[in-house]
Image (tube, rainbow, N blue to C red; front, side, top):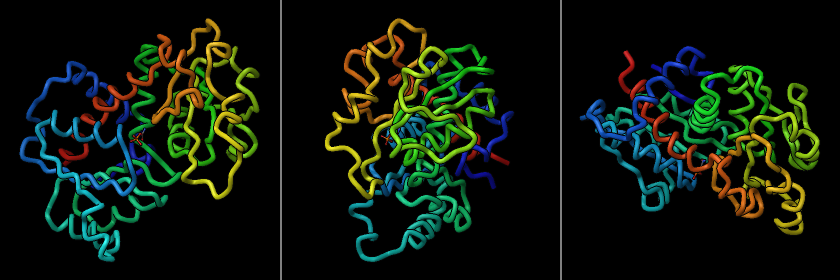
Length: 293
Ligand code: CP
């Protein structure tokens, strides 16, 4: 059985096929491809975009969705995550979508179930559906031609599962990934170039992806205030100028910390397009994994 724990679970060919399928859903019309199927959402961590996009995707395909309210589940009575998932599995769902604060949780749970597990983000490890929708958005913009394109990922890459997935996925499609961050957020890597300031690289990049500072994963305070970080790393019109560069962010965006209000209104900003594409790509993923032979 095929699960989606990390982007390398899909071959390049499978990803391109997924994207072809995703394009079929651009009209956002509902169909009955997954009629009679039941999908369980288990979000042990907060989510706005991923959870609602998965629910929308499932419902657009005619599936029923059960989103377990983990605040009112028996988890508070001491049940382990393995027992929670074993019990959900015993209800015979057709797929389980899991977000968990511990890196590796969805992978560990995938061996205990009889249906596909989809990783909706685990700790600082991976967020495969986000990286796939990011790649889809970039491909749509460049008419499929990502070979030789360069992306600068700006901010807390060290603690970001979105960066973790994108730095592996995008080079498979010919893109160069570089990081821009203060020393405290630099990702230890010999594979990717790292810069202190976006100005050093802005003339060479095709895409800028800004990241939220992952305060929930920090063990110490790195900046006296978010604005101290923002003065060097907030994406502003001053930094972008008139350059033909895509601006992306996985969300949630901290306004005027990650991206300025002005740049969030700018035509080059793809943030909401990413969210829409997230529904299309997740429709294709659900269809592929649930109807797999
Ligand atoms: N991009 C993303 O994972 O957003 P949410 O945390 O709102 O799901």
